[in-house]
Length: 255
Length: 255
Image 1 (cartoon, rainbow over the protein chains, first blue to last red):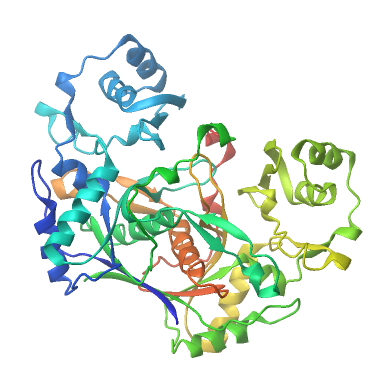
Image 2 (image 1 turned 90 degrees about the horizontal axis):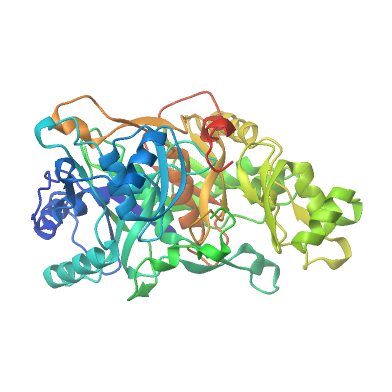
């Protein structure tokens, strides 16, 4: 059987406002793309639309920076109120320099600026706000999966992805911050079985590879494409979330 | 226009031996998949088949480890001859512990064990060998692109990918070690233009995102799938290679 994976950026997805229900928006955009969801299909959602629907906006006028946030903001040349939010969203500051603060987010991933999106700041000077990551992206993904199953009858897989810079390599790449319905890290059989000896096993971060693929599709168009449908991935079912994507700190040579 | 990207793992790719010409192998496997290459199509090749065709095997019996390699091998609990090859292939040892040596490869990427593949070691005890990365993956990619253009008339894009562990996250993910025909890092326009203000620009490592996507497809089947055809990526043409994927060391907070 030929291995074939098809990714479709769902067209015409509307702007999301706090309190919006993403499920009918997803169903409408699937219909516009003439896709009937089937068992095993994967939907990758950009973190931004999930965070907006969950009203994860923080209003800077409401934030009182701590002394720690003020000191770090000075060193990093950032707004102390945003740094306060970064500290609230994270468990550890890993690196900082002018213009950059790298933290370990409370959900485990290492992320510049705790994944806080500041693209709304200048657009609304009277009411400056930033967008935090979802409180629990695995829960968000599981809830979307469950409600999409009720609506379509299909057993779907869900990834909530974000995009971030990486050590050593330039340019951002997509990765998974929440998953539902499948194993995000799987043991793959390497090529060596072709030689008839013991199988060589590698743990592969399939959720990150697919999150990166979807991130590429999301970035292709000038319009926003926050949801990508993926067919053909043949993922392994699982009832768990994305925790296995986080390397235990004790095993990490770059902690 | 709907953004759609289709990845096909080319079936029946033969085992590659030193000196083999990959071009007819690629053309045969495209034909088996009933794919006629078209301008803008991308081919992603696993590093292993390029290295094998270029006879990048090193025979351990030929290697005399230096004192530095012996000391590091002792600390990392590795074969000193393989560590010697790692040192020859790299410009800097970044981290080590028992079982792991992370280096900066002479081509710039940070990689466990300098990307040296040891899967052939146990299979041939009389003549133990390992497989190094291609000498110059960008040159290999450019040559393949040129010869495929002569054979098919199509302006193709090429990625040579490898798969590696990453800091902070568990499981391997694919990334690009060589590219030809397209810009591997591009400036993308963010969502913020929807609000009518200054465009927000992000540098996106599209070559790595597509290398990860192809790596997922390569890992899907029990048989080896070393070449993946990608249609619909609409990449930006370029005559350069993959150097822009490497973050300058001075800008790297995790150097």
